[in-house]
Length: 263
Image (cartoon, rainbow, N blue to C red; front, side, top):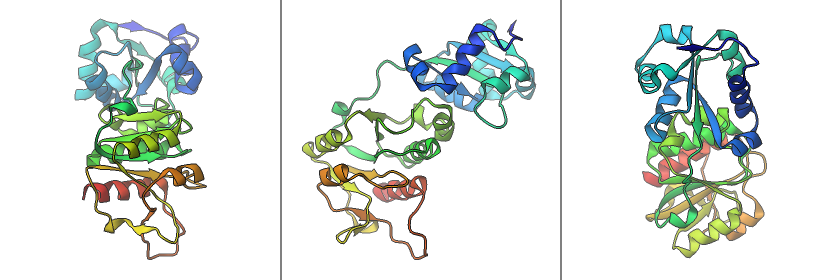
């Protein structure tokens, strides 16, 4: 197995920059997963990684996911020391397993949606929230998540890590014009609700969901934008709370909405 010991190695610098820079990821058409389990999930969808880097400590720990990746790469895997793992990691504690991937060419497209239940994310800012929402929607069996282009990048390390592999199993649609996307859903017969507090907001537990439904989750600080609210035909929905908190975390609210949509 090849060994890399220099932090200045071309491959190491390339993978580190992919993890740190969104523009560089998309100009290169590549991204990095960290950890044996997340990388195993990626392999189930994307096949063989372009490159596998692993520390001796990770090899000693072993596990079925890492064994699968090592078998897939065979002699092409690269051994790296812990100090390089620390350079590549986006987490506080490096896992010692890094895979380089080509971005999928055939991303899900809005025009392919004909029915199903979806969450729509309007300008969320926290990558952890976006990843958690994708994970929750995949777990509850929704048909996909629709993101505005202003949301965090799907291939950022924190989003990838927070999805716990859900991003490789659930269709995720990224829209440059979210208002247009909402209007397209309505034209196809979708119920489209926004989560917002207003005089006519309905308790989400009282909604009768059709097989064509979408709910918009707004920005953590400002909620759903005015343009999106006006594009939603249905009245807004709310999650009733008995405590004194003004609102819920976007990830928590999304999980409740997703559960109600399939309950």
